[in-house]
Length: 382
Image (cartoon, rainbow, N blue to C red):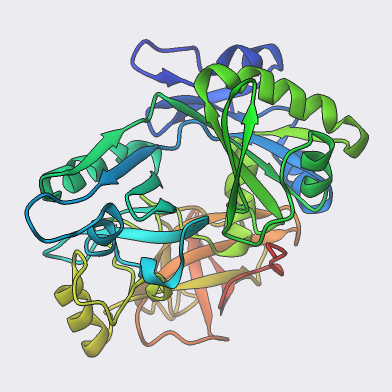
């Protein structure tokens, strides 16, 4: 990947100068100029699987929903978020985070997938995807009753992800909290300001996401790299983040989830509070669940030597004599650095089943892949 020069139309992380100094390859990601790799995707991927790596993910959105309704309903920020986003916040409480979805009311398609931090009944902190933050905030603000505010804080905070089996050791070396449960968060003070340490991540490894004030990000990044030297910490770019999440079968919005791809189709119905009385898209999703989706997200594992890429057609026959039919499309595809094979996520016809052999159109030839259920490697998040 060639170096992308800074553009006045792209936002930059508060750590941009650090990335440039480290020789990172930069590219547009959700409207932000972000590091794709430093020393190489494969090496950075391996560091997270076997040791520890640190990612700058400050492009991720940040927003706060706060207050209590003054319309006589008695609804708190907690109640409001629970009546709009798909997952059920009643499954958790203060000090815990939850993966959830903002769905379109009419279609049930996914506007965004995001993490909700429950700070109290009156305060929910949200981390949406970079490109979708403004739309999520717009939809929430438009629906909020008087007394409940929705504030876009995209530029107020930075987010660093410390991921890998040595991540707890690194945080302990910094004197930061590291013993809390998966999807729980703890608060600390860094450089005189608030720091939130959450046991979350997008890699499938034991890890943490650290949310700090933007002015504190530079010192925190430097301290992480210094404290991580005994653990051979590596700065990691979004290229390794993508290969790591694909090995886990984690969906990426804009590819495996979108306004055209519902939670039912993407197999993230576990993040939907089906028994709730209200959430955006509820009726559409209940109808789709009852009828059965027209397509489902599956994993594909290489049989023939080939690297899958998004938008490749998936066929039910090898061709050319038996032409067959197109039964789906690759949504995410890559070379797995852990398994040393091509892997993919693909939306397939409901007739597809685990163990089927399907064929991808790779530069005019059909390569065989086996249909499987992700993850492709064992999760170590807990």
